Length: 217
Ligand SMILES: NC(=O)C1=CN([C@@H]2O[C@H](COP(=O)(O)OP(=O)(O)OC[C@H]3O[C@@H](n4cnc5c(N)ncnc54)[C@H](OP(=O)(O)O)[C@@H]3O)[C@@H](O)[C@H]2O)C=CC1
Ligand SMILES: Nc1nc(O)c(N)c(N[C@@H]2O[C@H](COP(=O)(O)O)[C@@H](O)[C@H]2O)n1
Image 1 (spheres, rainbow, N blue to C red):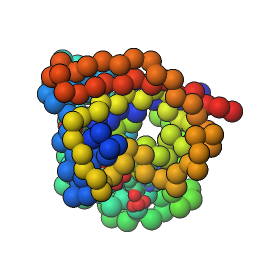
Image 2: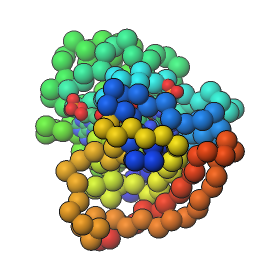
Image 3: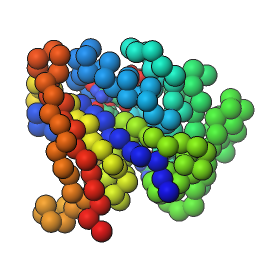
Image 4: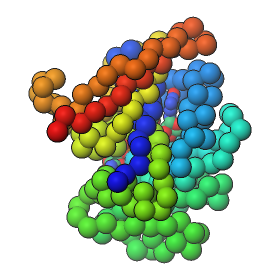
């Protein structure tokens, strides 16, 4: 058993979630409110190391009423600086890392109440992350990027729904919604997407697409 996983992101019309400089503020205020409603409805939010480092996100519920979910950071080498907001006391934080994490950083975070899982192998297995969270009572997860982390989960068929806001921008070079080895053809994806709904954002310039993801095998 694993939690239900929503992948939520905002992209440019050329499928970028960030520019080549890491700039990623794409959503309008209505879309951010929608994001925060989803945050309030889940038990945990997962982000990858680069998103934590580049964006320094709070990952809290601020634009709607609701409780803050648990924050989950996947950071194989524990590169995230201790000064990041994700390690503040506004919500519980859990870190999944590997033997590559520096011991002093692990101890400092543990002292602050951050739960650290040191997993076997060179990278963190996303299925293990979901299994561990499920055992802690987590039933719904919001996967909030970035591209590499989206790939890690999606390529292993560990996403149930994609909620994608297409914003009226073009970045060209940048970070793609999904950053991984890639699939050669549409046949090669281990999952199939079914369009569930299309909504014009209240701002009139963004389109919110919902897809259900089903595993082919
Ligand atoms: N527009 C939007 O909706 C959003 C945009 N973004 C943007 O995305 C960009 C970051 O995306 P990206 O660069 O792809 O990086 P990610 O945020 O996905 O972080 C990738 C890093 O996280 C670590 N990581 C992720 N999965 C694993 C794993 N299974 N095992 C071990 N380590 C793992 C790795 O660190 P290591 O290499 O050290 O092992 C990896 O390099 C930022 O610029 C951010 O602003 C992010 C979220 C939403
Ligand atoms: N849905 C969505 N739209 C955007 O335009 C975004 N830039 C993001 N980014 C995600 O939100 C995090 C920032 O959260 P806080 O406001 O600091 O709580 C960022 O790190 C991405 O995960 N998402």
